[in-house]
Length: 308
Ligand code: SAM
Image (tube, rainbow, N blue to C red; front, side, top):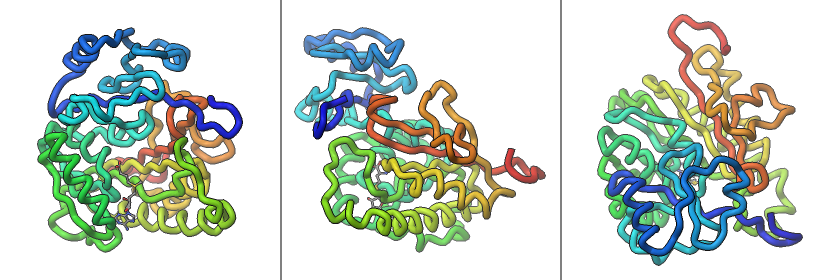
């Protein structure tokens, strides 16, 4: 971690875009560029001690490579060609944990600028359909360029409020998966310097965000064929994370339950919250990533009563 006033150093994570290439080709490419490959990381220390032109394979995500902090690959040929995506490890978790089957229909409710959408397209092998929504036209335009570069084809972008979508619309009758990554305070982003007025109004701001996030989650759970949903934020605040999920689930506990995923992930939900083990948290200190939160919900099997 960095000293006082300094942003902590988080490694540079590189997601291999399997729509265009594969891990071994990317590893070979970097070796030819003078990097040395150390294989799969065996411990957090392996990752935190990365320096110079060394790189590792991530132990949790099989398509993620790890480089030393501050490695700048924005000018790299593979990045320009869409073969690699520069995406923090924590932000790779939602699509990875949603784990949709190729051929399925998915809603990406808050999709722009689209890193998670392109990851979903890769998991689907471009087979199926992703309905991707966002309110922000500029971010959608960036997203459109990025998805073309990544070779994703199985998506429809809509400049639309997710809350205005009709869950009963036949168009969505086969949607079994939803990724919900709503706007949040961004308090987990290491590079983000909060503006003063944000801090001054933090309680009110968190309340407003939390209300919005609850509305979005409650709306998502209304889709009739939904089987699995991932809720994520890049916030560290309980109000936007555990509180949102636990509160909305109270009204849906007959239909949906939390699932405990990725047992090898060390950092779980806040210990003071119910179901803490079902949540994943991420942070520069414990997971060497940005601050992040993920919860996975699944429809209860038919006939089940109450969550387990
Ligand atoms: N999932 C994106 C990714 O991986 O690149 C990042 C999403 S960002 C955290 C949240 C997005 O939600 C913003 O782009 C914002 O414009 C969008 N948004 C906010 N309210 C929305 C709404 N009611 N319907 C759809 N999108 C919304």
